[in-house]
Image 1 (cartoon, one colour):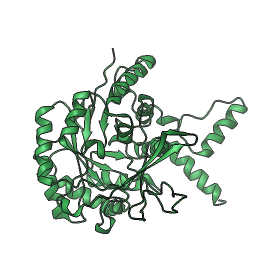
Image 2 (cartoon, rainbow, N blue to C red):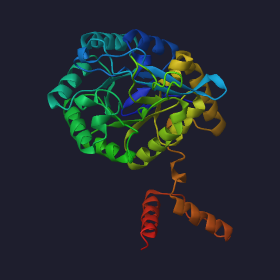
Image 3 (cartoon, rainbow, N blue to C red):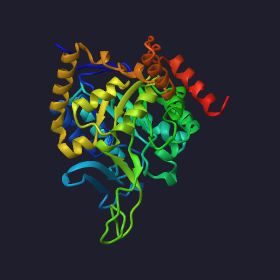
Amino acid sequence: MVDLGIEVCGIRHVNPFLLASGPPGTNGKVIQRSFALGWGGAVCKTLSLDSSKVVNTVPRYGKLTARGRPGEVIGFENIELISDRPFAAWLEELAECKRAYPERVLIASVMEEYRKDAWVEIVERVQQTGVDALELNFSCPHGLPERRMGAAMGMDPEIVEEVTGWVKQAARVPIYAKMTPNVTDPTAAALAAVRGGADGLAAINTVLCVIGVDLDTLRPLPTVEGCSTPGGYSGPAIRPIALRHVMEIARACPGAGISGMGGIETAEDAVQFLLLGAHTAQVCTGAMLHGYEIIEGLCAGLAAFMERHGFRGVADIVGKSLPYFTTHAGLVERQRAARQGKAAPPQARDDLWQGDIAKETRGLLGE
């Protein structure tokens, strides 16, 4: 028998699968439905203190389908903003969710402007509902950048550290910082969040994109009154990007609880995130496209994988594949040793990883 439960940041999850912040967690009713179906947890749609400033458009979604297979969605763009529902209503619904399903993990996603008083207020009021943790949205790529919210904040490590520090001072529950993939170095903001006091890191949010252009009207998609704006790209197509970010963050921040996401639709997808250092796996677009009922297959598939490999607990999987990453220079050295019949260098460790980077850099500089 295998145990699908795992403890992360002091919180016990009955299984490692959570609905990610977004349309699947748009209100308390659907969150409770997901718990009834078997999801281990849910991250509600991102909240702010003043929902009146949030105005969504129609349409706000766009799909990229496989060539010749129009029913197969491989990429999904959205320009939807954070929740436009009243903050007071959310407080009531979060409290009700915890009363109805106390054993399920409920995480509140919060996002505010670059003001300490706003962040402290939202943290203090939301945690009174009994939520298990907070997820700080430093990563929505198209969400109110003119107010320095979302990725506009998350792309600046100094601001990430500062705001995380504000939250840590006010929080009585664990806090996750949700990372943006729209950066060159995914570890910079992650390390800043940890310095600020984050207990965990969530990665990744959506990738900023333009899903396409209508070749009849010549207007970009999704088209709103003839115009559009870049939005967040999700779905299976971003999974390789998400895996790389989770791997690098896991190596850089070994003490943090990591929740991985990005293109997860099957147990096999989720297991790859666990092997690269994630402790839990979040699903958003997969649940939108295939229904909340995919949780049954996720749990069954994870159990089958664990039995096949002899893993008794989910924690045994976490980071199992991390030692097998090195630099290209390290790969060349291992291959050279193998061809010469010599013992291969040790598996990549942090010191070897850093040594290989230094050696490769010196080579590029001609030193």
